[in-house]
Image 1 (spheres, rainbow, N blue to C red):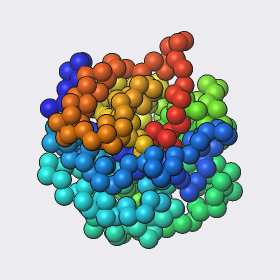
Image 2: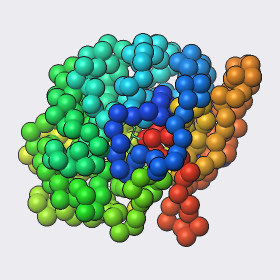
Image 3: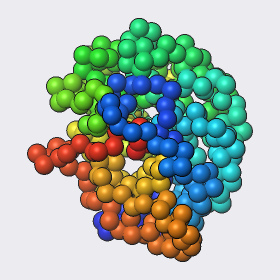
Image 4: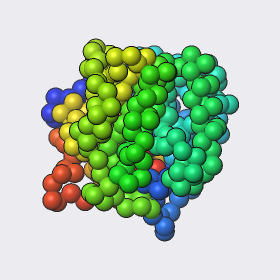
Length: 328
Ligand code: SAM
């Protein structure tokens, strides 16, 4: 089993399948001058499956596929279908901006993806365009409905809350849980390199976000038996059908229970979202390493997993990669 030096069991792998995205979200897209990966840089599906198979063989039970935008990579459904056949894998999920979801939802379910996270930071068309650079909000909303119709459960909608950008929509997003069984998750804005650099004055903590919602209506804590809820703290409205989730990577980090590994599209294994320490699996694989050697690298990476991130310490430096390159 993959157990790190702080006795945390590492059973969750997030795989980024591409750095490419069909949106240019201002807080995520890399600053000008940052190079894109070439096709050769990106791991093939065979390479990704090989790593996943070894990780699952060593106790990884949950895999999330992300990017860039995972639905822009050709052959993604076939890859997911192969992945879902791995014996020992209990949970396969995907994070998407939802632009292509309407057309992919049924195929995703058939490929074994039962859970999906859709990123949506505003419900206002003009603002959506300002944030993402695309005018696709109606496609995303249709995609969300289609995911629900296709039987995905739960459908989670992730909103990154940024002061002065979308914070006046917090209650509007919360209200969605009154009509729909969605999980609406409010995520704290994290410090990454991006076109629009992170500034503390644009940051809103979970506490601020909850305060805004409870001014409107009381929140009732939800029993959190299901470990698939991850680090979100869950609540609901008394008359709601959906769930509100709060994720606080900055203000109340969940490092002590972090069970994650991340594989970047170019084959680097990262054991902490905020640490630039990486282990290059691609290089080893392309040099012809054996499965045993690859497995040993996984163990080495896990052993080096840091105890926690240092966002709130003066010495903290933003990661050299943006979220699109790490895989959010
Ligand atoms: N394209 C997919 C999507 O939009 O969900 C997957 C990749 S995207 C990098 C994954 C998630 O990272 C999105 O929910 C996005 O909002 C989030 N993200 C990117 N930059 C962030 C930041 N600085 N702080 C918080 N979340 C961020």
